[in-house]
Structures are given as structure tokens and as C-alpha cells.
Image (cartoon, rainbow, N blue to C red; front, side, top):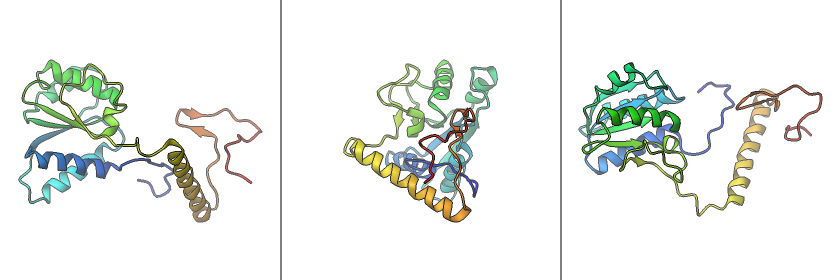
Length: 200
């Protein structure tokens, strides 16, 4: 990650999720596997963590294929690349929307039926209340219990983390970014500061 990055990740890191996927596989003696990713942010880190861990492990892992799909839409090239998957276990790293497309293509190739296990991190599975039809029966997903962590406590802790990060950024860099952008792009410029701006 960039030294000056202002990206905040709430939840498990990519490393924690990747290692958890390996722990699940080790528990069930699923040592032969492939990795399929899109170019979703963090995919290189996901691959590197898995590859490094497998290469330096005493467990007899057999990483058969590492496939990174360029396309987020169905195309012949993706199908050709997915045809390389012969392992019984497939780790899939992508967004939920991309997973719908990838798993639909995998189903058309016979890669989601009997004899295949797909394992995904929590970001791919998303909301467990909404499961796309394309997700195969028996797909394994990492999920976190948050029912015993009340909303009020989560909001309080989240604000505390953001406040601490903003204070550390102010101390280290002398300023903090203005609230002029969002995840969706630039906001319109106004002379009035938004109420959420961190100013006294």
C-alpha cells in the first residue's frame, strides 16, 4: 500500500483471509487447489500471500493453476483460461458481481458440480442474506459473527478509529484531506464546508 495512502480497511486484511482459506483447506486435507482471481483491488497481494505461504510450508500443497481473468464480462478468453482448472478446490478472489459472471462461466464448463469445491473470502460472498443463483451449492465462504457486537459499539469504535487516524495524519503530514471527494467521484465545489469536515 502507498505510504501516503488514506485508504481505511475495516475488517480482516487480505492476508488474514488468505491464510484462513489455507487453514480451512488444511483442516480437510484439501491440498490440491487452483487460484482464480479477477483484477479486483488486492488480487496480487492475495496471490502473493498464498504462493509465498505454500512455497514455505511443510504441508504438501499442490498449487496447480493461478488464473487472473481480465474480463468482467463473459468472453471466450475467460472460458479458455477457466478450462485449465482441473483441481478439486478453487480459491476465488473477486467482487461479488464478478463472482456471478465467473461462476456462471465455470458452471457452463462443468466446474461447479460434483467434485469441485469453491472457497471465497468474505468480500466475494458479500451479504449472506442475498445469494446469487450462480453461486454453486456447497460454496464455502469466510464470514464473521458480528451479532454480538452491537451497532452502537461498532459506530463508536469506528468513529474512534477514524478520529485517531485523522489525528495521526494531521500530526505526521500537517493536514488532513478535505471532505471534497467520495467513493463515487468529485463532489461539486461549494464555498461552504460540509458539516462532516474535520475542522474546529
